[in-house]
Image 1 (cartoon, one colour):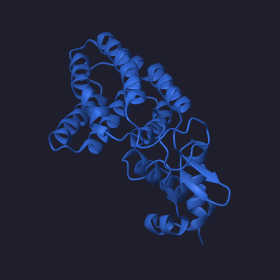
Image 2 (spheres, one colour):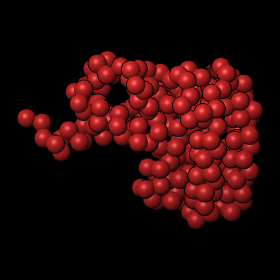
Image 3 (spheres, rainbow, N blue to C red):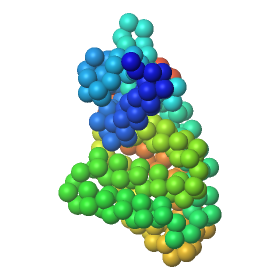
Length: 232
């Protein structure tokens, strides 16, 4: 018999797997979530899957629509602006308060190397995934599981915004060298300077995201139509 505790762990694992699929771009804005297929892929019961989906709905990553079931959220301009507000609040202070000897610095270095290698092969979706890992590692400098959890959620939302853009190279290419510069500055022991660079980076990243060509016409309301783009 499956206990409530076991089911809770299974639901948490399933939520993690779904969140990861969003971060990696496997699940895209507006994608329908078919319970039977997803439960089979994740190896969980449909009841456990529903618990996982409720978690992601609470995080804003999934929406339930009457007579249509669950779908991956299509981000709005307001939600993207809020994501960047949180990022500017959380990420730069992490660079200021930690030193280059912190274990998360290795993750930062690995993420930058992965992004550069992916760019060399033209895999811009992989570049986007590595970029998110770089910023997750930056927050890891704070040694705060709560901040890690917050960032996991908002970076998954951000990936949905990335998925609404028609040209991922336009979105990611300008920031590859910036990531290298931020990393090198931090590893050189100049955390304040790295934080200042990151603050400007995040402002430009937000502007670039809004200036990128969307996959399709924007739906500016909080009930964006499936398949519509998040930004204009």
